[in-house]
Length: 292
Image (cartoon, rainbow, N blue to C red; front, top):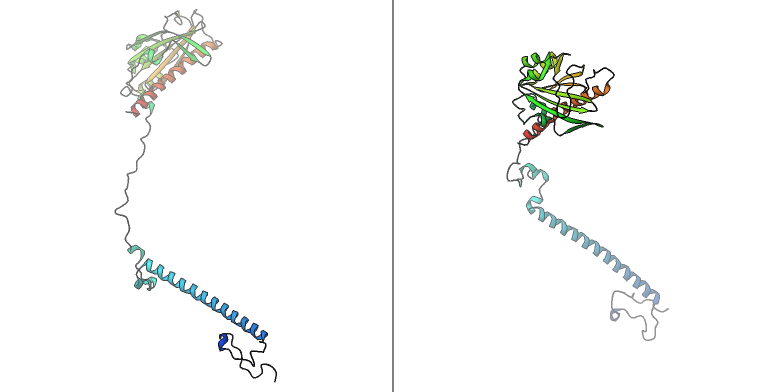
């Protein structure tokens, strides 16, 4: 009989003292192939135990976390209920302690119209004089510089005009006429500003004036008399409660013709400047009233 036949098998899970004895241990050789096979089987079982043990531990941790989340979000009895049994969101009280504050809509007031102030004597109350309306000692328009001459003001409007203009200003209740003269290179111009209580009266006076409605020229302050007997160029206009007239010509008594463009330019410059000054007067009063 060969070595090891009929002997009980060797159990790798038992200690050496409990293993069966094969033949004569004192002089026999162990079965190394069997021992290696048994060791490999033992290692496989250990790996399976580690894998199953890790999976079980993971499941246990996940279950513990789920229970902790449910406990943190509500009562354990409520957490098992379906969502249909929970109170609707509308029933949950709000943290707000009162209604949101409300504010009345506000709008900025419309800007004041400067025309309102220069269209009525009741609003056009700022100080006024020839030197206020025509300040300084000279006037610059573009590249043209005019030297300021004499000024005058009267409440007897008819005495400051001539031709067909006296009855026009009287009929429309003129309250004042202011005049100022400017000169340059032998050409002079007088501007006459007639004041009325309303813009309607000034507009009517402008419409009633004709080619013979003339403001009387104003010499003085270094300006010789002009446009008393010679032909001169005149203009008529109005803005707000102001009607303004110009007369321009040569200081040497020469008649003005259509070819005398410098005379026309001089009259137009002073008419334009008068318009600007009246408009600025309205703007200044509107701005002052807006800040009160």
